[in-house]
Amino acid sequence: MKNKWYLDSGCSRHMTGDPSQFLSLMPLDGGTVTFGDNGKGIGEIGNKSISFDDVWYVDGLKHNLLSISQLCDRMLNVVFFKSHCKIIDSRNDQVLFVGKRLKNVYVIDLHDIDANICLTSISHDDTWLWHRRLGHASMSVISKLLKHDLVDGLPKVNVNIDSVCDACMKGKQTRVSFKTKKCISTNRPLELLHMDLFGPMCTLSIGGKSYVLVVVDDYSRFTWVAFLAHKNDALHAFKCLYKKLQNEKSLTIVSIRSDHGGEFENNDFEDFCIEHGIDHNFSAPRTPQQNGVVERKNCTIEDMARTMICENDLPKSFWAEAVATSCYLLNRVMVRPILNKTPYEIYKGRKPKISYFRAFGCKCFVLNNGKDSLGKFDSKSDEGIFVGYSTSSKAYHMYNKHTKVVEESIHVVFDVTNPICFRKSCNDDDVDAIGKQIKDINLKEDNTKEAQDEKNEEGKHEEVQQKHELREPTFPRERSYVKGNEILGDPSKGPAMEENRMCRKPVEPAAEMVNRLYRVGSRKLSQLS
Image 1 (cartoon, rainbow, N blue to C red):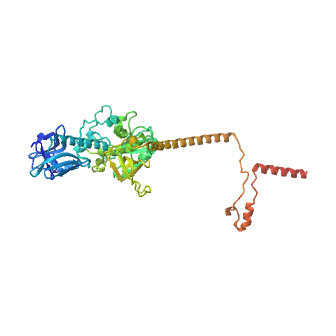
Image 2 (cartoon, rainbow, N blue to C red):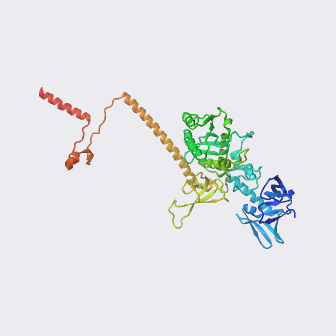
Image 3 (cartoon, rainbow, N blue to C red):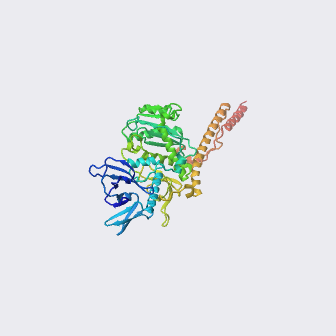
């Protein structure tokens, strides 16, 4: 009965008292299972074909127990019959295990080859699904989240740190890194903020932005991003962030650190820092290592965004949505070294919930909730592509293939079993619509620039002419009042004034008037002589 496992509905964890069952075992202090003073541990059991993680070792336990609640958490249904039981995948109704009834208990043999292959496949699929949902976070990060129970909503999946993701290799591969710093320089959030700007991008975002301002809290590593059309918008973005942070926390910003970029090193930025008592530090010229916190964060965000865009073959104009999603995910899944907590938990004071996460670029349907006048038999939803999360409300961002815009809605249904490629799922009109939006933005900026240049040139030309020419003022050759107006006449004179005003002769041009007076004067002088 060594490989026999009993299904137990009252057991909160998979448990065994046989240490030889474990492929790996880690000592564990405390926990929800206690049998006197017996030692406890947590590890992985199985063989080359199958493995269960999060299995508890309880010294002295006589039988191997499989927790039904833990199986259900893995999206598996357990159905009991008179002589046997079945473990079924709830997503596709596939039977994974068939157990036998021995007297009054149900038993499963882990060496059932067919079942092992099925369960391994399902576990593998779950792992890669959550790898994609977490923005292609590394397997080591997912392992830390599970090991230290840092987030809520992440199911127990089998993590192989040596697994290789093709999209990650295309989007993230780098040279060998150097050793990290093993101490924390600050004592609380907002004591030091690292700032940097990256861009301009070769392609404008859907909103017409070219730059990204990245701000990282040194203590928690919590990160904020702001999208800018021009570099000189950095100060305005930082002012908005400053007000937001002061409202969120009762803590003040002590100092900020940036490079010597013109968007940071200017009189306006310095005046703002002096006014609010912020110490502005600069890294040495051409020494990005002195501001390595934000420089590394830039690289991580860019890699994650690039990977998600490459995997789904999205147009590059979606880079802003990918960057915003990357920042959102990193705040909730990255583990702060030394503190062993996520940036979200350190900054917000509570563990993040990630059960609502979805894979960037997956197919989805959004409810047409009053946006269009629907007929009785018109479709109630529009097909779209998931492109991120709202930071101001509990909602998702999705690209609506019908309206050709990015919308925010909570009424979204996701097709998690059918990852899609943008260029395969969208017709040419969808791609052309996005391209036209970017083209219109470029054309608008070009026209504005050309109009401004023409205006400046005309101004210069007129200025030169005024310097070299003395032109006679021009007057309209004919001016008559067709319609009466009380402001132009005396209302007390009534219709007569209206008639006189309507019959008034046109005003003569100045030159003709001068000539006429000259002729009249000459004629009178000749008469006198």
